[in-house]
Length: 253
Image (tube, rainbow, N blue to C red; front, side):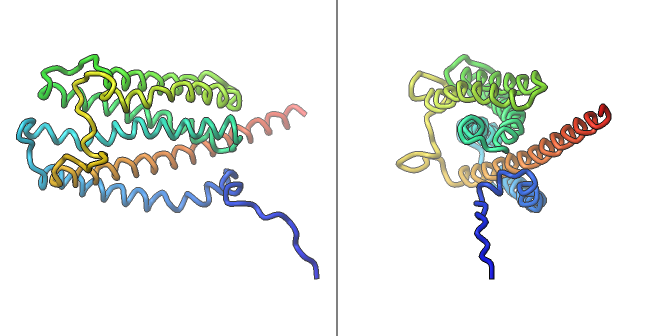
């Protein structure tokens, strides 16, 4: 009787294998898409039919249900990219740079949506589409950082070298995230202080808070779904490139 003393792979090491990752996450795509769609439909129903207009802002307050979740995701996605950057430089996780590359265009899209909806909301509320206050300016800088990261990925043919350069750039740019978060506390801005996540509880009425939370989860699950799809696409693209290179070497032998 022989004893198998082969070391078992941890879940972390299994997850690091692209094939294992595809196998584990592929069945999640359609359920996530279904739940995301249901949450969006529920959130939009709450927002348009079961949520009152604000006594000051009127119906324009409904822009909040898109603006706040996308503004949150603009920062969350970048924080996730910073963790992936550490995974690339420190832990050498094989999928860290895949995650980082997949997230950058999504983060840029959410940031652009936050800026656009914010300007649409700002016109009737503040009397102007744009004001160079701390939060708006730092969020615009975040969009430029995202676009710079996307451009960096495309500037390198060697993806391993690109991953290291992008990881360093991402970590340097991460300093902008706390600036966005605390800009309303550090400087005098048009943005109000936090009214949802507060130590003493939300200051927003439940009739506005409920659809906001539903849309918050809907947009977050949308990001998770699109992130998984983008990672799957990138893994398959790299496999194809590897096969093409092997075939080219075989042709020259």
